[in-house]
Image (tube, rainbow, N blue to C red; front, side, top):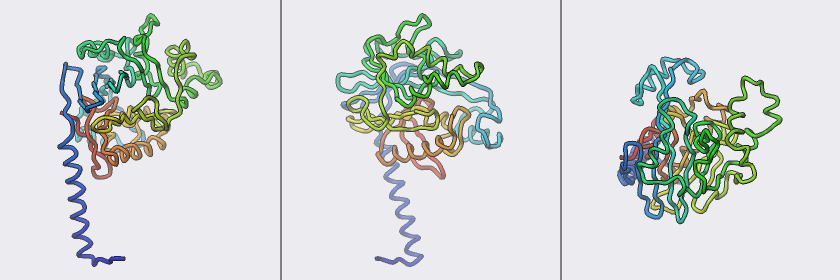
Length: 318
């Protein structure tokens, strides 16, 4: 075993940190570019894999002490300011993505559709701007069953928005939200999410493909369990292109939570599991030098990730 005196150990630590930082900076510098094709659509060319990021608009809610449970409101405001976000409200972007891989055109999550608040529901408009016909989608892959991810599957008439697509959902997520025993045991006033999942999926039960996270959902699309935000929340590593792409869905909410992964947002159903998941998934992205796309990350919703202090730094592609 080689022993180093304290002075040399300190020098080695500085050199190692500089090397790691240089590698991270080099990876960011060599990252692909996001080319805007419309105000709410951007394309990223990964060779054999083509990615189109599509905005579904943006939501907004007043900032209150309950948004980050257990964290002083002043600290939350300071973190929002540091992330370049308003401090009197929370503005939440919505980003879906279409991936062309092989002969398949895959949509990951469907946005708010006709059921969201003002400012949302822009997915189809931006798909049209990007020249993507909803009928050309061959598969829809759902990360979890919160309304802003599944409501875009149907119009208010009940008709399917993506009529030629097979729909893939995590089995643990399906089992939790579609459990009739849970529905019966839940007070009527708290059944909103459960009832919404049934509105979207009940008539599709015989055709929805339910997968166990951990395997390949489609060729080149690997699923990874990321429970905590919801009981079956799942993320996806898209492989086969010039660089891997991790769609991490709601692993974090707005950019503030990338820098503060140990903070839990009010929407996290299991806060402790969500905290552990954030670090595990972020470390995976960095370890595999994957681009990261997130449903609530800053425009265009895809970029690079690096360690930063006690958390991480997301840098959008430009």
